[in-house]
Amino acid sequence: MIELGESASFETVALLHLDAAYNLARWLMRDSSAAEDVVQEAMLRALKYFSTFKGTNARAWILQIVRNVAYKNLRSTQEIKTVSIDSEPDENAESIPPEALIDPSDDPIATLIKQRERGYLTALLNRLPTDLRECLVLRELEDLSYNEIAEIANIPLGTVMSRLWRARRLLIEAVQQEAR
Image (cartoon, rainbow, N blue to C red; front, side, top):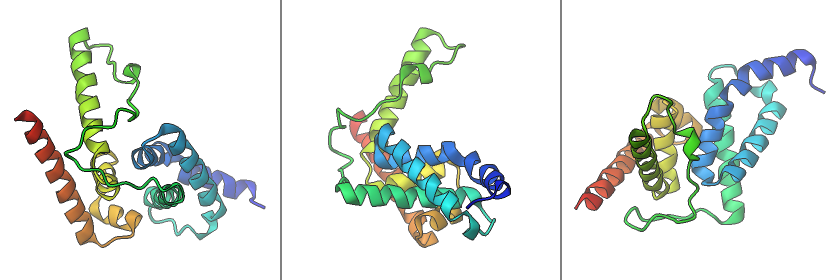
């Protein structure tokens, strides 16, 4: 049984990173409902194994658990798919609700432009293979270091760098191809 002191310690260490955990899960699962389930299961595992946490980098530890749970769920449902960056975007891809993008200082034209840009970027990211998208989201959206990404994904540092390079190259090529 977990004592109150341990529970409070878990809250101060792990729960601070819920937003990052959900963000990673959402990009990996491509479904907000599935992402919520992944985060819930990951937090239960984190709580269960909190006594093994070494106290070095809570964010990386939590995100590694989220990543492992997400991949386990993807494997079990056979949803890991490689999608060509050149293919058409998935019409069923979840979009961000417009109210989340509205800045009160924006006029309607600026709001529309932001919505289109966000949708365009989301579609491009969703078309990346999962392993490349994962590294890019962790680096660019979660602002993690290469070393933290390597720790979370359990891959060598060089692999992180090559995946980031490939992901960025595919995004640039997709944008250039559409510009033509």
